[in-house]
Structures are given as structure tokens and as C-alpha cells.
Image 1 (cartoon, helix red, strand yellow):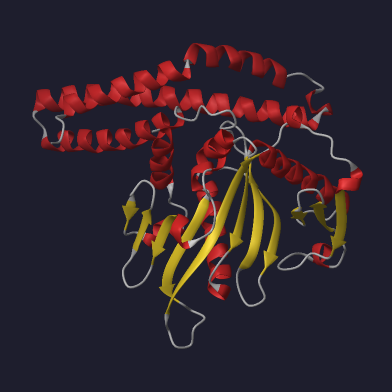
Image 2 (tube, one colour):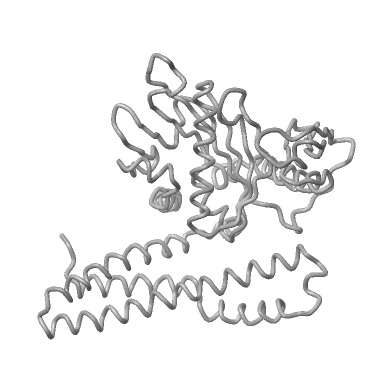
Length: 364
């Protein structure tokens, strides 16, 4: 049964009040003053890593406080508009109130989900690796479609990304790709996307037009911070340099600037080819390698596996989401049962509802 506008407004206000309490706005404002002071230090950029950390935190605090305050103001304004609509008995004004309440419901729900991100690493930036799995050329194409979906999602949220490495398949698509998402809470938000994604469609690579099922795996790990740094003996790392492949400028494709690091004890392999400089690529690859080694160490504790990664094995029985483009159109999450028939919007990066449902499911 739909709520009356007055009840709907009261419910939204109460939910936002709970969010404000969980976020602890007075403490955030105190921290903002301290971070602003840090950001104004003249020699801040002498240490670029620290400077990026400070400016990123400053941007996050300013954005979150602004978002909550703007929502509170809109709820207050909606109350005034509702008073006017009721006093004048104006149908158009009532329609405007209903529209505003529906928009506010979505925005309050979105920020409410953020308060559920209180895991040890949730606040961190994210490293995402996408790999083609079963399905041959269709799987490679599907992996590239997934990569585009996540990059478009980040664009919609104005989150900067860096594609560190892309291994292109021979005919179409990609074998694998790794990219970073530079935004606070990117790991906490996107970690619910980890697992096997299954696509069913008419294969564009089959001259008989047959239906094809293909799989791609998504891995999400938190970016390492200075406090996480571990010593890796040089003897434990094999370094290979090679020429970058795929689309790119002449400077990228004509020099041996790409770097592949292999951690011999664990067999973990990472690559980076997005910079012109071999030294820059090696430094970035080392950060990725360190993140993956630390993730491996966390997995030694089964509770950490459950909390951070979940079951991401790639097989028929462990799909976390199904994307069906034929014989009907539907995307359905296997964990939350959330679904939509607007498959094109999902593939264009509109996956907020799936992520929100995933975060709530994980919290339960």
C-alpha cells in the first residue's frame, strides 16, 4: 500500500536522520577542518603519495557533507511545497510533490547504502581484473563488454580510472584487463560485483546464428596503502619487458615499455603497459602485485575470504549474475534476485540498483 505524501516525507526524514547519525556529521566537519589545513600546507606536493591521499580525503569529505546537507534541504523544501499543495488543493502541485518524493526516495536509499560500508577495507580504492572464461571468442568479447560496463559506471559517478593492462584476444575482445578505480569506498561498493558473470545471446561470431553461453570472471581487491607495504625479496620476482599491444600511440607500441612481474613463490602474474616509461610501468605493476599478495595472505584466514572476496570460482554453479539477450531480455542477480529487462542500460553502466541490492544482501 502506497504511503500518503505526509507519511512518505516523514519516513524519508527519519531515514536521513539515521544516516546523519551513523555518518557522525559533527566528527566529519571536525576532520574536514583538519584536512583543509593539511591541504593548504605550501610543501604538500613534496610527497605526492601523501598529497594525493590528503586531496582525495578532502574531496570525499566535502562531497559527502554537501550531499547530506543538500538532501536535508530538499526534504525541508518538499515539506513546504506539500503544505502549499494541501492549502491550495492544486493537483499540479501535488503531482510535483509526488515526483520530488520519488526522487528523494532514490537518493536517500543510495546514501543509506553507503552507511553499510563499514568493513576494514571498504573505504579504499579498488583494483579490478576481468578475465574471459568458458566460451571461446564469445567469452573474450563478453569480457570486453563487462569492462566497458564498469568503466561507464565509473564515468557516471565521476570516478577517475586507470587501465593498467589489457591483454587482447586474437579475434575479438580481451583475455584479461586490470584497471584501478580512484574513489573513496570504490572497493566497498564494487566488491559485490566479484564473481562469474554469465551471458546468453545469439553469437555474432557464429555464421549459423546459434545461441551461445559465455562466462567472464570479475575480481575486485583493495588498493594497497603505505601502511600495507611488505618487503618482497628481489629473488622472488621475475621481471619481463615487452612491447605493448593493441590500440595506442606510437610511443606506446614501438618501445619495450610494458612490464610483466611474476611472483615466483605464489605464481601471481601482473602486467602494466599504460605508461610510456618502463620504470613507471614497473612501479605500478609492483603496487598491483603487492595488493594481490596481500589479498592472498588474507585468504589464509577463511573468515577474511568470506568478508572480502566471497566465492568467485568460475563454473556453471557459481554465477553471481546472468545477462540474457536471447530469447528474451533480462539481467538477474543470482544472489539478491534483483532483475531488470532493460539490458542495454545495464551494459551501458547503469548498475547502481544491482550494487545497492548486493551491498544490502551482503550486510544481511
